[in-house]
Image 1 (cartoon, rainbow, N blue to C red):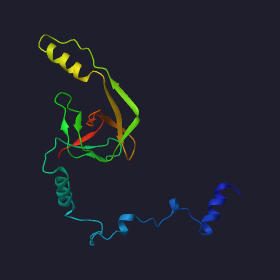
Image 2 (cartoon, rainbow, N blue to C red):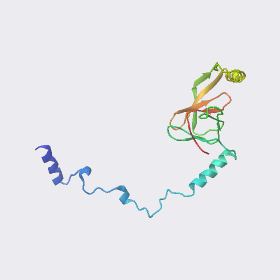
Image 3 (tube, rainbow, N blue to C red):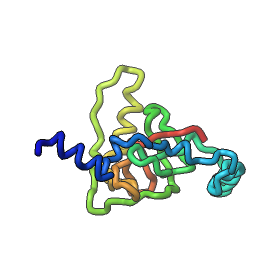
Image 4 (cartoon, rainbow, N blue to C red):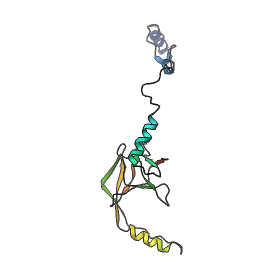
Length: 164
């Protein structure tokens, strides 16, 4: 027998594959949309809002920070960096893990600036001189999201902000 005869033989015996079935039914045809699903709560957004406000203690935040890989919430209360608008700092975080074994040293950078910024750049470099940071990652997917300094302030630079 050749392959066409094999297919005819299987069809005759009732062993038809689902891809050749004439009675394929869509999942949408089986769903009864007149009944509200058990897992839907129309008041859930309001409950979440109350929970977030309670966690913040009445303070406002520049953003809610999320992991860029798995969208897990990392911070509910943070401040946006004045110059680098994609960077944030915070003291209280959730779902973050400190990689104690990975220390990053920041030795300060010597930048040449115009006459206007000369004094401030020296002060900034002096204040950052010799600081050490530890890497911070998402506790769910282990994506690096920022660092924590010696004063236990988190500095986030690889996050997705959303309006708070």
